[in-house]
Length: 433
Image 1: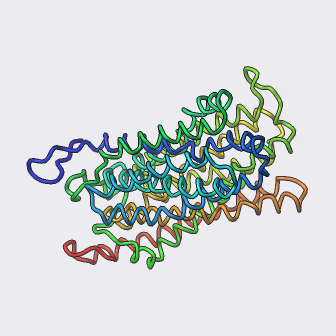
Image 2: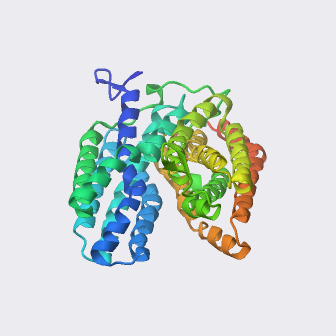
Image 3: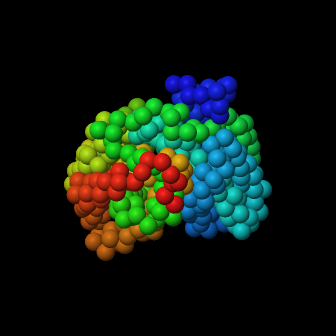
């Protein structure tokens, strides 16, 4: 669709092109997180740094990539539709490049941590901008658009895993950090110049409110933080994200515990190798698929379907995971029913609180991922205390079941009350801040 922007004679803006730019930006920051594992062993061997010390850099990156997104989103919204997305994504691209170049030259762990700070801040800025822009341009297909954008981050590293591995093997990890940081950051900086947000609500198609209720006006971050329905969403996000991270982040030791890790099952590939490939693909596909479903039947019902399947998948992997093929199948189902949180939750957040501050508001909700990360060590504690992983799978299944009930009862009721209150306000007037 072509949407005229900025005046009668302004050049039309193609919203699908905007979406494609956002997806491309997400692909370009994906390996900041998903290719990190390739660098750990080479850095350890080159400098003698402990694995724990090196992994602290990754924790710093994830924390800043998550917790700084509200600030980046707020800046993008405040700078306006023409300047905001371009400026924030461009800054993110520069920080990503500098961060990885610092990693390439780092001769000490503090220097490596500085690189993590810079790349985390840059990655968060790009992530917030891309998701916020998708939410604003596609009120009629918001779940699908945000799902495609999130899929770029979830599956984008697949394009660079092999090239990065080859560069590390041929020129060392420093060369890989330097060149991929420079190239990826440079491309983000270049394509970010074309990012725009819609200047007015009438520049985009109207949503089908019968399928997906949406607020008639926009709410600023302060009003969002004071809204009960936001915190219901946030807690649900934490529970689902923590359940997924407790299992997906521990897939290798889980496979070893079930004695299937090294079993060869397909074209010379082991169970763990095949599972990781399939899991990454399904993790990426889940985001646009369930986002598209939610555009047709509503977010809460889609959450209930996905997380019910997730609860069953956790239970089945915990019960039948000692069979190599069933391990691959149910691990894949867990990834498929977990990755969609990154499309469903930001979509519903924008449905509830409007598009004007969507970048900042969706970023506030995204901090739930950072909070969930602190719950992941519970899996190791529970596994150690019970002598196996079955209790972890039971806990993850119960967390999913709690969110299913909450989606169908608490969330639906709170959202309905929010929309009723929104309908009582006059359409004209300032946003609720």
